[in-house]
Length: 238
Image (tube, rainbow, N blue to C red):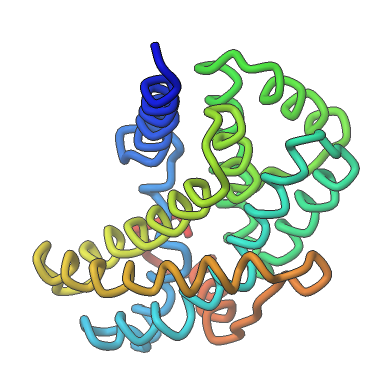
């Protein structure tokens, strides 16, 4: 096998792995969460396709750019050594950035499930060691940190890790929106295509965010998410 064939084989392996780990068939439990969207719909803030579009453009992309994707980038680099002290700091930071209890609870469950699956399905020592240290030190689990771990376990580059998180965040939100609003599949796909057009600029900006500047705050979303905790009826857990 020549070098080009080897590179192609390795790329196919991590690409297929990332597709598996971000598929709705993969049991992370993310399908049960609206990530605050149900609360915004209940408040009447998001009520149709255009208000959903504006929410994602103004809020979701900003959160990815300033918070989730920088966490992925710093964790992906920390896993290389690995730098366990920094990893613990990033886990705690990721949890602290979720101001609503439901958001922290959702992130903990999804992140833990992803890490446990990475350790079980890939039998990789890095995943097993991270899981051991997280349990011993009491690190909160985080979907962003789990995504960085998955990429490292699969041998995927940073850009692929960022792309997988970016895409999964948008698809998860739109899938929830289809259950909460009058949106068709074609309408969601056209919106998804438009949003993916922002990926490049978001990735570049996220890659420049230092650890001490990671964070993003939207009281509008946090208040809706907090009210959602005590709603009389709910379709999603969060």
